[in-house]
Image (tube, rainbow, N blue to C red; front, side, top):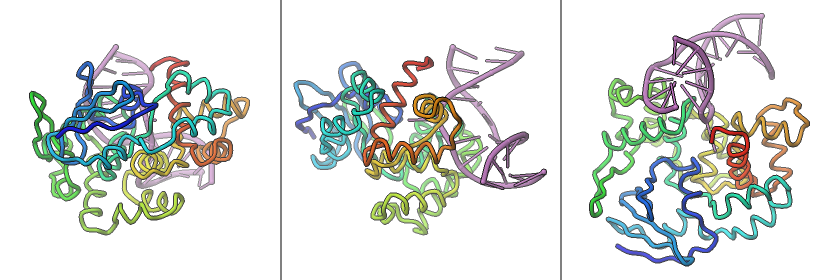
Length: 280
DNA sequence: TGCCAGGAGTTAG
DNA sequence: CTAACTCATGGC
């Protein structure tokens, strides 16, 4: 299957390598990844997104996945009134927030707890290889992200053998609740930001930061403002003269300052801080 | 070797 | 309510 979509204001490298998704591989000239049940290769040139997939994905789903319906210049005008964000925009122009599969995103960020991105990628790749379905396109082979029911049935020891550590119990417990339909992520999506966050935080392994990442990267809740140690330090230094603030206070401040697209501001601020202050 | 990595749950005060 | 401790492992 091939698709061509108009895609202005898109930088694939910034978008796919900024840490919001963990399964995209740079093949040099294009990126290979998995969306739903399809292996997908994407490239961007002349304002168009070129997509080749192993199975039908649908033009609408692709537009949605890459966030192409969002008016990025308008978002920039809004959050770019802040001079720091404005500088970050200049550096990372074209970084878009994706709209990923909700269960995959939730599971991925449960695994992200207290570890680094290379290891998160390894855990997700192992889970997919072990419990997903093989998909191929040309020479590329990959695996779909496993259903919640598949993880729910998995042996804890098998999950730990993939390097999940203490996260194995968290993800199995949450997978079980989703498989048993105790919680329905589509219904969570119908709730407002506050209510949706409350629902997600009730799951094992999901705290405020993980919930905000999931809401931002797969629920289109753009007011979500994930606060990790980098963002917390950055907010304190930039806006509180170095005074210590709680993560909740930092997020409240950000929503007031940046408005309904605070989550976009968070992404740009995060990468700006990592770039300016080293280690990234 | 030592130290850190985009945290969350539990327990203690 | 906040603070301290634990959880496991790859990468440098």
